[in-house]
Structures are given as structure tokens and as C-alpha cells.
Image (tube, rainbow, N blue to C red; front, side):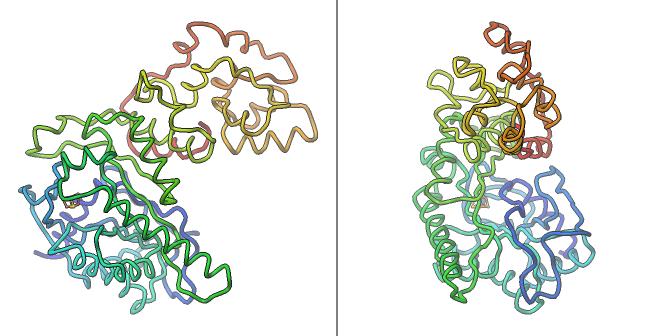
Amino acid sequence: MDVKDKLAILADAAKYDASCASSGSGKTRAGSTIGSTEGMGICHSYTPDGRCISLLKILLTNFCIYDCQYCVNRISSDTPRARFSVAEVVSLTLEFYRRNYIEGLFLSSGIIQNPDYTMEQLTAVAKVLRTEHHYGGYIHLKTIPNANEDLIEEAGRWADRLSVNIELPTEKDLIRLAPEKKKPEIVDAMQGISEKITESREDRKRGFNSPRFAPAGQSTQMIVGATPTPDKTILKTAAELYDGQKLRRVYYSAYSPIPHADARLPGQSPPLVREHRLYQADWLLRFYGFDASELVTESDQNLSLDVDPKLAWALANRHCFPIDVNSACREELLRIPGIGARSVKRILKIRRFQHIRMLDLKKLKVAWNRAKYFVLTIDHNPAVKQLDMLDLHQKLRQPTQQLMLFDAIESATSGEV
Ligand code: SF4
């Protein structure tokens, strides 16, 4: 099989993994002669489903000895198989980079022989790129739980980001659909990476010349909708990973039905708007001071699909509004629907010099159609009278639509939630 055919198979096989983004990476590595993670001339390219920008996103191989039921590459699948050599991945990365097709490499793999052997192969790609070709671009390597610690150490030395996929939100889900994977082993692997990242950062802060370890941090992916697990549990797992393992990102990936799937799996994907709401809720957990338990209730454990999670919270907690933008503290301002963290920062700055009027908020480009019901300004805001109207939810609901994933991620990361 030639490299082009392998690429067709192994790039397609990698599209299900959402755990890649080059955010958090620094500038080109010192001493490198090619490769930049930022700046002019970077070409953004998309995989067929739009999940990844500007990265050559491939598997080293889609052979796998595991049998995760939600995965097209599982051992029992009859999907066409292919395998790259280390030299082939190195050459493809360099060629694509030189042609400005990509800004980096995201490399994952099915598990071949055992975790150590697989990790060794993945690490070898990064090492050859860095040491033999002085490649300074972004590298994200998938880490295999249970791989030897020395291999992880080496992987973190050459890669910008490492990720271990948690895949499913609960231990019970994993037992059911991915019996070879154990949540404690996955969390242990994340913990080991997290400690090494912290150690390397602290050493460097103290002025030691120790090598950098995964400077862009670690991320993970959770598949949504492969099991009936509700959003409440998904967000709780995400919050635990952010707190305990200091993850840079949790990516949510709507389950995509695969051919000849196990009968326990749903026949269709969940609406992508559910994935979109999870990204918005994730944003609220990380940057807006919300707790997972505030966003989903015991009675309804899934996020609303027709309004965003911040608006849903505000509608359910109308007694906390209206909020006076001229006197509220930062934490209160962050709770106002339609006003993002960036606008809050500007409001706090502007009001040191002047009283804030409706027009000022509109000029800040807050989402006024949502914010107007929840804020008091120095001038008269007639919309605030409608705060207690029973049909306000109805008025503000957005028609649920099947969003494209890329729209969802863009919107979720734009900050105005
Ligand atoms: S280990 Fe990864 S590649 Fe292998 S079957 Fe499971 S999810 Fe698929």
C-alpha cells in the first residue's frame, strides 16, 4: 500500500478524536530552524468533519488489540487497516509543513502489541522530528495509559501537548463498552503527566535548565451520547479532571454511529447542539465561576437544548436579577446572560470614569437581546420590566438546530456566553 492510500485510511480513522487543538502552545521552539505555531502564513485546514484546524491529524496505525465498542478501529471491526512507519509520518509532517498545509501534528494510534511498544513508536516520531529535522512546530501526542513512565517522560520532552482520552464519563460506561480500559488507570496516567508538567514548570521558574515537559499541557476527550449518561455526570467528571489533573481542555465529541455497531450503542448521533451546550457549560465552569451542580438540576440532569446554560441558569434564578452594571462585583457581572468575561473586564474599567448606560453596553457588543432583561443601567432600561414574565423563556429560546461541530466550537469559545 502506498503512503497516499495509508493517509486516506489513517487520516479518516483519526477524525473521531476531538482532543486536539494547538491553543496553549508557545512560539517556535528555541533553536529550531523550521516550524512555527503562530504568526503569518499559517494555513488552516480541516478534516472532513471539521474537528481539527491546521494539524496533520493521523493515526500511526488503526490496527488495535482492544475492542472498544464505540470505535471503528476496534479489533472486531472489519474496517480496512493500514500502518505508517515512523519515517513515513516524519516525512509527511515535514512535507505538509513546508507546503504550509498544516501548523502541526496530532498523532494518535491504535494499540499494537502492547502500550509500551505503541508509546515507543509515537514518541519516536516526535523525537526524530525534533532532533534530526529541528522541527519546531506543534506536536500533540496521544498517550497510552499503562505505558512505561520513562516513555511518557520522553514523549513530554518532545511534544507540546499530551492527551489521554477518558473516552466515557463513568467507570460503569467503560466496563460496558470498553472493557480493556480502566478509569483508575486512565486517571493515574493523567495524574503522572500533570505532576511532570508541574515539576518542569517549577524547576524552570527556579531557574534550573531542566527540559520542558508538555508545555501546552494535557487534554482529554469524552464521547457524548454513546451511553445514556446525563450531562450532569459528564460535567462532574470534567470538573474533577480540571481540578484534580489540571487539564487544559476537555473536548466533548458527539458519538458517531459506526458500521456493524454493538446493539447497546444508539443508532444515531445525539444532536450536535448537545455537544455545543456542553462546550458552553465547560466554559462557564472554567472562566465564569459556575459549579457543575448549578447548571444541571437533580430533576433535569441534561442541559437545556433551546437556551444556553448561562441563560437557563438566569431564568431559573430570576431572584438574583436585575444586576446593576454600575455597582455589581465581577462575580455578579459574570452571571449576566449575554455578557462575556471580556466585556466584564471592560465594564469594570469604564465605570471607574463614567456611569454605564445602555448604549455603552451595546457599544461593547454584549449580546443585548439576552442581556437587556437582566441588567440595570444608569438610564432607563424598559426591557427589565419583563424579567418576571412567564413567557420570557419562550421568548428567548433559540430554535434547536443541528449545528455543525466547527460552528459549535467557535461559538463556545468566543467568550460571550
Ligand atoms: S484503544 Fe483506541 S483505537 Fe483501540 S479500540 Fe479503543 S478507542 Fe479504538
